[in-house]
Structure formats: C-alpha cells, structure tokens
Image (cartoon, rainbow, N blue to C red; front, top):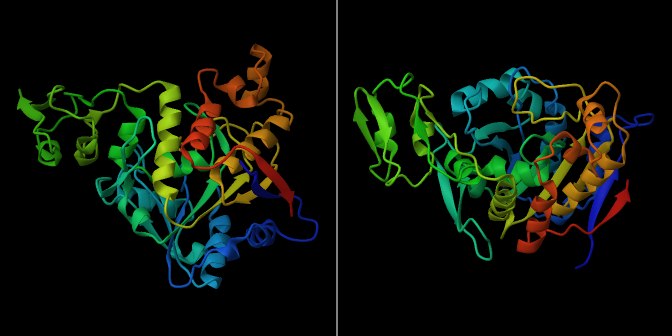
Length: 369
C-alpha cells in the first residue's frame, strides 16, 4: 500500500504564531483538495470536561473554522454526549461545559451542535461491511448529516486505549450514547436502586420492553435487553449504569470500526496537536502534568497514518521529569510510552485493525512544513 502523507510543523514561534503556523499547515496538507463550497462541515472536537485544562484551546478550532469558511464551507463544531456521568452527559450540560471552557460562536466563529441530541438518543444507524464486531454503527445524526467531516484532535494518553488521537476522536467521539455503549460494553446496563426515582423515563425509551418496575425501582430484564444504552441517556438521575466493560483489544477494534462508519463515502480531513500531553483523557475533570514536551501539529487525509506519526513522535521524545510517564518507566521496561503508563492497553491494535478494514494505512511519509 502506498504511504500516506502526514504534514508536520513544530511548536517554535520565532517568526509566526502557532495559529498562523496551523493555518499554513492546513494549506500545505492539501485542504484545498476538498470542495467545501456550500457544504455543511462537521468539525469534531473535544470541548474538555470542566476542571481539566489540558484540552485544546478554542483558538485552534477557530483556525480550522476560518479555513473552512474561506473555502466556502458551512462549518460547525460538534461532539456527542458521554456515556459516563459528568458535565457532558446531555446536550444542555454539554453546551454549558463547552462555553465554560471558552467555546462559543464569538471565540470560534461558528455554531456548536451536540450531534446526538438532547439525551444522546438522536443517531443514525450506519451499515458496515468487512468489519468484525460492528455491523451497524450508531453515529450522532448531525455528524452524519454533514457533507464534509473534519477532526481536530488533542493527542494525549488514555487509560483504556493507550492514547487518544484521531481514530478515538472519530470512532468513540462520534458514537451516540448507544454507540459508545456498543464499543465499551460486552454486557447490559444495570440499575442503582438507591438512585431510581420510579419516573418510568427509561421504560419509555426502551424499544425491547426490557424494563419493569418492582418495589418502586426499575429492573432491567437481561434476557430482553440488547445493551443499546438508550435507557442510560433517558435517566435524569444517573440511576442506570454500564458496569460491564469489554476487553481492551475488542474496544480498540470496535473504535476503529466506528471510525470507518464516520469517514466512509465522503470527504474527510484530520488535524492533531501534540501539546499538553496528559497521561489520561480530557474527559476527566482534572489533568496531570504533561508527560513529554510539546512537539507539534500534524495534518493528513489519513487518520490512521496521522495517529501512527503522532505515536512515533511521542515515543521518540524523552519523558518529562516528575511526570507519570517518568515514574512508569522506572517501574517497567516497556517498549513505548503509552504501554509504560497503561500496561493493559493495546493502541497498536486500533491502528492495525483500522488499516485492515480500510480506514487508512500505518505507512506514512512525514513532511515538515
């Protein structure tokens, strides 16, 4: 397979700001090859969980938005609701969290749309062929309604997938709550009786008639339940939870299959920024000190090649002292930084499977801008 081109610029700013360098990177990487004229363009970002300050600043999103606008596109920033309980579990709180972290039409020059709706139930079933686990991915509707897809990813460590980069931002990030449930879960949701208010909202959302009520609380019939997770989104009291996670390798490969559902059959373009590389995801309301120095910004039409290039650059960097990575390497003799921090993760499976099913290729040519 032919190598994919990945374009790179470092974080030095002696002659131009980082934002100007990012704009030049987008052009050098071939963004003009996409016909944006009059096209709705979904720009997938992570708005950051409030309290965490490692997420990408909205300034970077503004550069991508303006680049799309200059090319005639109609951009919007987007993400899907989370499966876990936090400040981004429904569209109202999600938008508030985004605004609290500085994302607004004023700062980004575009609107923000939570792609899977108020409670994470507004999705599109996207059929897949040639995949192992997922035959019909559940993707946020606004993302699938877009004509062009762009991802802007903060590259960082991740406790379940080794690192979070383009494929995770696309695959996991674009899944609705039901989609996230399918990727994370090998079982069915359960009810915390102490939190249930007997409101019956979960039962009304269930398409399998799998929820009944006993002693003033919901009970999920595990034989009827298909594990779609819609009841989790319907519950306003956090009484329904996913507590049966699937194996890490399976999670990684499902994530790649979901990424395929998002990018297939339409123009797509991907940007990753390696700065403030924290050991765990931006979904946490706190972040530890960076594990390596700020390295640079990358862009490509190939999300698999982009992730591979980012991982290689990170692994070639020396760990920062007094970081979780430095402590991890003292405890083990691991072959890479991400495995050192999270020994049970399998990030290479994500990229290998993504390559096998046609999301992209791990072979790349790094071109410095």
